[in-house]
View 1 (tube, rainbow, N blue to C red):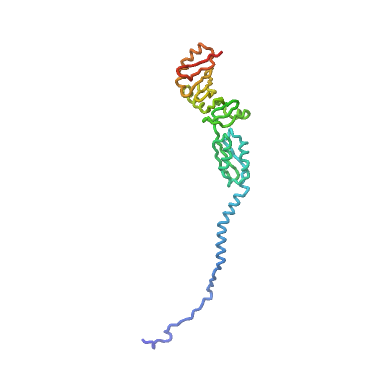
View 2 (cartoon, rainbow, N blue to C red):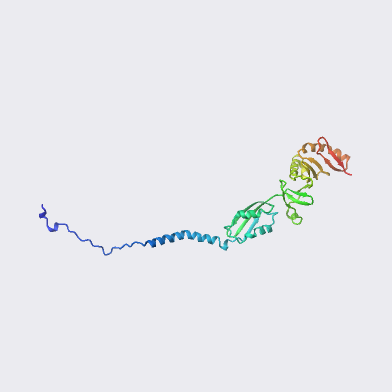
Length: 269
């Protein structure tokens, strides 16, 4: 078959392209609109937390108005209230806890402080106080001592008998000796290890000098002058001698055990 044999109907028919009547016309978005949308989203992500933070740190809801204090025996609650009064009304969220601890540590009785925030407006304070182990008599003054022989605070004769521990050991130090009171606790522990019954009745230790002490015991009607580190040997010798002394002397002023191989005693007049 040749090209001449093709009929017009067999020829390919090419139709002109026509745009559908229902076609949607796409419009390009404005770059300013896209930029504004991104800016609004960024402002929402960043600005909202800032606004919330400003509200939290400025709202009167979180202003400190309440104090809960425990663990205080020698530290008066009124003193705690006065010490922390400058912080009342401050925002609890932004309040630095180390500042609270520093303010309370100014009291000589405070050994440790634990502070907790309780939202929305309360501060909880737990105090750890120093423990008094003895009363120090230095001349005419009395002060509390801890177990390390360090002075805590002066004895208040009006309030302390009502709240303080009773039957504390009395440690006396003559100002002229310049001796430290800490040695009194060492000799008291030495006595307890050797003669527990006598140690239980120990009421006062007078520091005479470095290593020398005068002990007042309820078990004996007279004081003992001793030197630390020698009690084990010297008290054993004294116990052997006491029955003879009781028979011969109705009353003694003192017994001195500080000298080697000698026991010095003074009959009472």
